[in-house]
Image (cartoon, rainbow over all chains, first blue to last red; front, side, top):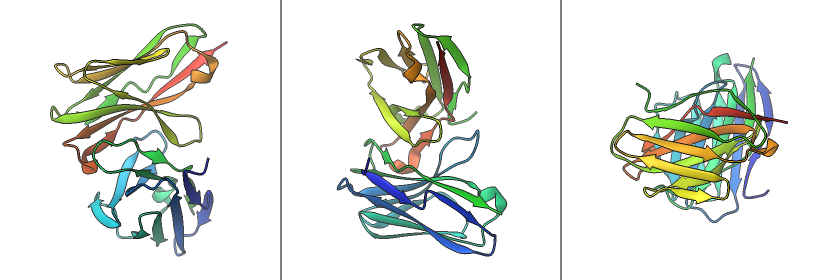
Length: 113
Length: 111
């Protein structure tokens, strides 16, 4: 499936590294999202972008920095992460932000050593 | 009380069985409800929306009970391929900021 793609699929990084996660959607959607999924926990909504503007930041630590250059691309810049940040990071997109179906990418499995 | 609560399971049922999951929500202003399915090590995918009048899609039936603030998913004639984690999603006030996922209910259909 090529609707929502994410790279890399797996990432291992040290606490002092800087890395970026990339998400691209080919669905013509206007809204994009970053989620964190940790083991045995619900998906946690991190950031929401609508028409390239950030509309939600759910109290995410500043070591996570999102960037949305256009409606099709979304980045998550990572720096000085902690081991507890290890999780599956999922990107999603939807036509709008009011009750529309969200389409998810395959996720990036992040391990912080 | 959690905003959205699901029985984590696991539910282990034989092929052909009927199984039902409930999901309770705490915000009475919740507007939209969905069931998503997540296979092991895969991303969540929309299974079905939940309408006020209830809706059916093949072997799957979703219902909403606003008075008791829960939604349900009924799976009839379970198939091996139904094995997955089922996530309920509740959206309040029509805004993505109020979108909340439940932690999921794990279903395993046994041969």
